[in-house]
Image (tube, rainbow, N blue to C red; front, side, top):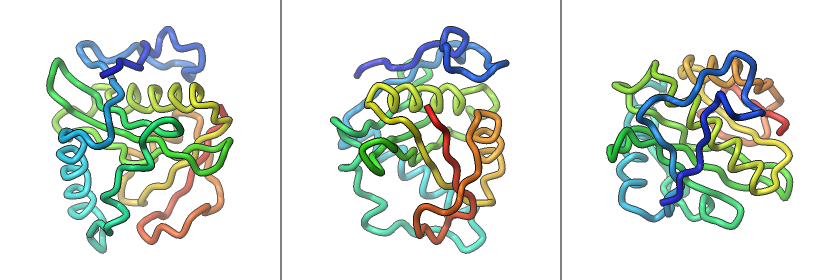
Length: 174
C-alpha cells in the first residue's frame, strides 16, 4: 500500500480555508482487485440503493474495477488506523481528463473531513497521472456530496455521460 495523501494545509492546490488532514486518517492506493475494495464497494452500492428514489442495482459493468488500475487510474482507501473507512477511484475519460468514481465514506465517519481528504488525494493522483481536469457525476439525493464538490471548486457542467442515476455533473480544472 502506498500512502498518497498530504495534509490539506500543506497542499498548495487546496481551496482557501481547507483544514489539515483528519487526525489518524491516512489515504493509500491499493490494488483494485483487493478484497477490501469489494467490501467497501458493497457498502457503497447498498447506500445508493437505500438513498436513491428509484433504488440502485449495480450492473455488471459497475462491479468491474479494472479501469481503476494503473497506469491511468487508481483506487484509494481512507484508513483510520488499520480500519478502512472510505474509498474513491479515478479512471481515464480521455488522455487529459480523469473521472472520479465510487467516492464513499462510512456514515459513522462523516463530518470529520475524511471525504475532503479523500477528494484532495484523488485530485493529487489525477495531477500525478497527467490529467488537466477531472469530472464526476452524482445523484441529486446525495446533497452532502454536492456540497463537498461545490465547496472544492468543482463547477456544474453539461452531462458528459448517460448515467441514468445522475442529475448533476461537475468538473474541476487542475
